[in-house]
Each structure stands twice: as structure tokens, then as C-alpha cells.
Length: 316
Image (cartoon, rainbow, N blue to C red; front, side, top):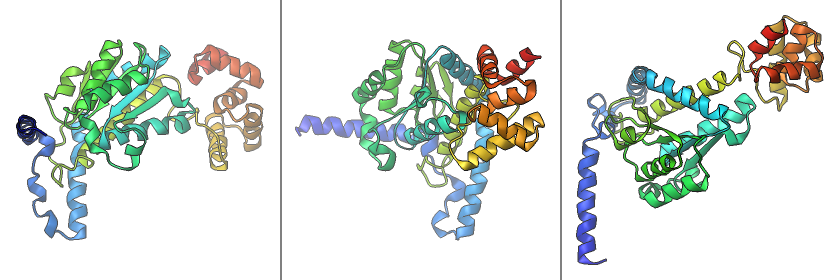
């Protein structure tokens, strides 16, 4: 490396150091300055106390979260996908949320897609250097064949991760709506995204360890966006998971209880309806509620766009 390259690298490092010093998420938490002297109970107590502030921080950005839910619902209705992009902990949280959608809502895995810097190996082993690669961020987004029907959600606690910023810039070029979730106000990510969501959780109890409060805030927001979008898509009835994917004995028992609870049918009647419906809870409920056969019940639900309440109302 030449002297000029050395000088440039050092200047960039100094600039980044100054940038990090100004981030709330990198600050020092006065309430945990004795952390290395605390007992196990004291550590648990201070962490619990700090975690209680996260919900309040998220509460302040609920209007922005609601906009993201609407955008996610619109994308899914248009045949698009929800695509998470992140690095490190943020990327893993995207992977976690996306992986939970198919079993919870009996939805195709393609509906929610997670892109993490470094690919699958980064899920299990940190590959922090890749987060600085803007070119790879844009390339990974392009490889996902993002279109104007998709919603792209960038995850970066700092709000400055080059990989994520480049991915969102590529998403804009492709006409996709974008959401940015960070924990530092006025960040580049917040300004770049069409919908910026920035819960300010303050300094971590372990300075700079953003897998703690910041990670919790991100997970809470992702839970709201994905669950809210799927609920609006007709994936629940009342507050029940009527679109669950029945793949084992525990879930068969849960499906049986759901049908009984929501129809007041006898256990044997509910079981017969589920068997006739090939263990589709919605179809079984319509059978029990209306006396239709399985084919007619399935057609009724399809005509209602998958919304069970609408299907039942129209069958009256």
C-alpha cells in the first residue's frame, strides 16, 4: 500500500470515528457504567430496566410503522414481495422475520425475502467487513430481481451502513417503495427511504452492542409490519391464525381447537370438517358455519379474496 493510500485510509478512519461518536446508539449509558462490577441479578435488572424503554421509543414512531404496514399490504396485493436488507444483527433479524411467515400464515416463502450482507454464511458467523461494500449491496438487490411491485426494507441501526444504503438506492432505481429502519435520527437511511422509521432507544447498556435495545426495537417494528400486512391480507379471523400451515400433530390439535372455538361445533363435527377440507382451517370453518361442502366453501373463500369474515358474511 502506498503512502497516499495509507493517508487516505487513515483520513477515512478518522472521519468514521467522528461519525460514530455522534451516533446515539454508540453513546455511553450512565446507568450501566458499573456493569463489570455488577452481580448477575444486577445485570439482569439493569438490562430489564433499559428494555422497558424500548416499547416507548417504538410507540413514538407508530404512525410511520402504520405507513409501512400499508405499503407492505399494497405490495403483496400487487403480487410483489417484502424484501429485507441488512448486515450483521440487523440482517439476521430480517432473516428471522422472513423465515417465520410461511409457518405462521401458510404463505409461500417467496413473499418475504431476506438479503443479508455476506449471504447465508453471515447468518451464523459474523462477516462485518462486507457491510462496507456498496457495490455488493447494489448487486445483491439487483440479483433479487426487485421490481416496482416490491417493498424493500433497509435495516441498519446506525443508519449509515454502505451496503444497505446502496441496496436502497438500487431499489429506488427499480421503482420499489422503500422503508428504512434505524435507531439514529437524521441518518442517511432515514433520509433516503420513502418511509423512515427511527425508534430512538438511546445508548446500550454495553456500549455499541446494538444487538441489545436497538435490535429489540428493530424486531418489534418488523413484527408489526409483517404481521399487520398479513392480517390485512386476510390471514387471520378475529385474532386467530386461521391460515396456519398444519404440518404436525400439535398443529392439527391447534387447528381442531380453532374450528371448535370459532364455530361452536362438536369436536367430532369439527374434525370431520377439517378432514374434508384437507386440514384447511378456513374451509373447515365455512363448512361448519354454513353446511357447504368443501369445494363450495373453498370457492366462497376465494371469491372473498381469502378474507374469512367476508366469506362468511356473503354466505348468509
